[in-house]
Image (cartoon, rainbow, N blue to C red):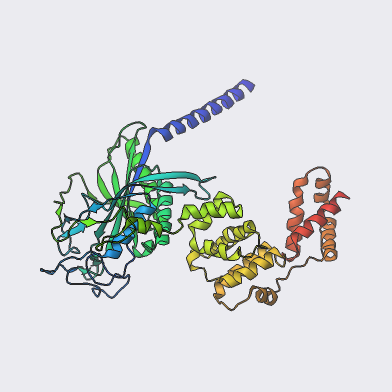
Length: 522
């Protein structure tokens, strides 16, 4: 009987070890490779080659010039501001700005492309050979942040197409040309990422950078920044294999989700002996799957040709003066603002914050703004301010399914709330209740201290009152007292939990903890 039992135990352990080994081998069987192409709409008043207004959400077909509608006889005129913003971005990403770049016609035929071609920069782009450095950190997935970089093949200027609107009920399609000719900056990255989390971290960093530069609003929900992801799997050490392209991913979370699903889909196909086909897929954010759009087995010939109506674009790489309407690259370099990575280093050094906190603060500009405002008062602990924002404020916002950008709480309200917490006028539980009330009310004139008074949330630090409560807890829980006396000190938390519940979270727990500890030692 004992031998049988031992055999079963050894057999179970062997199977468990084998399963673990198989999982490890399976995990290393395929290596995922990800490369991104990002289209960022430049933040200018007019379009790339016309004077039509460049706005989001305008009346349909109301921001269209004759050139945008491909009226014969109209000629493109390059928008100087677009070139400046493109150079700014290139310099921020350590790219080599090319002294001469040219424009090309890329031919394809869609209803929302009236001319039958798109003006872009294929042969000689505005800039090339850059790099973006970023931190990969997703709470709940990564224990610690790690540094990653991705090489940039090129940055080019190009015009956007219009937008096709499909009406299923009327069974017809309409075209809105408001977006036709809108200025785009395409950033082509090398395939040097490994998964969706790295890709999402890159996109988030890029959004922060272009926002700092004023080059793009970065509002992915408005289509101001759109991501295409190229995903493939290969055996470790093998050359790159057949890839699929996921088009127009519209959110940072969508980037992570789409790539994660595509890697899993391809791995399943390959593990079952199948073959990956070269195709374009779309991301269904509702079903959280990628779906086929069109295959790319036959390479499409875009019949690139030089744009005859635009001269070569020349920039000045040597002096800090604009000559004959030629932009000075060194002059633009001098005007670059502090970039996100510099801000992270700055707040880590000045405020002694953990890297994880610095990353989260900088990744949410509104939280960074709150932090900078709150720490102007040197009496406020930067670490405690950061904890309040990242733990308490974010927790309530997530519970309410709100983005930090939509937070209605003012800096003035947060300053008062922070001081109340640091002065121990309220505890963390009440602090979160106040934050929740301020979000619901969305009223700039509501004072946190008035809320505390109206709701009866005032806490007591009176030692005599707390002493009586502690004694009551001990007298009503003799079994817990015995366990503590017998060496099970972990039950101390149970005492505090009962005390907090009995007082409706209205006592200073730091004072209560000391009194309770003193009573138990007697």
